[in-house]
Length: 137
Image 1 (cartoon, rainbow, N blue to C red):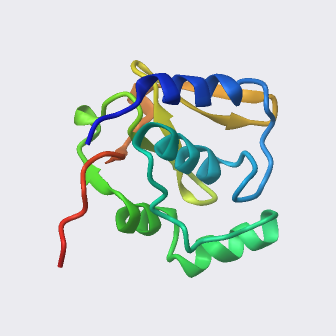
Image 2 (cartoon, rainbow, N blue to C red):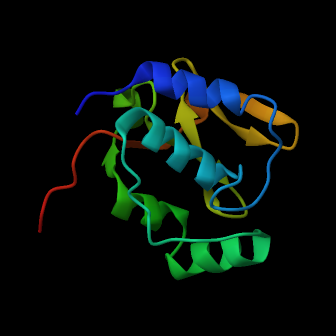
Image 3 (spheres, helix red, strand yellow):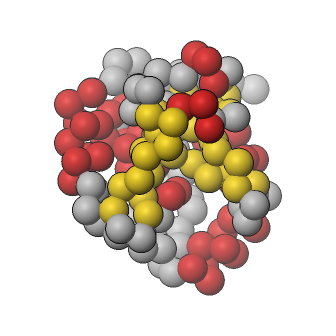
């Protein structure tokens, strides 16, 4: 499956100054990475999950068994060293176990209270491909 890098970059740019906001159609970390995956790969692997605010978001995370397990169901886990531009990065987070971000190259990008924030790639401890297909069981 090919990646639409122009669509990915446009998505990141469109969110550049948009502050963090909870909601499936808003700009929290999960909606950001799912939106970036859809922009570049044309699919939404988490169509069944919905949330509109922090309370329903926390409930959805708990129901999914945590963010790591949810991303393992939706995407194919890969070694962080193999993560390419547009893949999903997992950064350690005390509240949720991981904080999902998008690999931008040497940096990771995701939402913050003041728009997109970036971390160095070395912060990533796990990763998922947005283009590899999950094997059928």
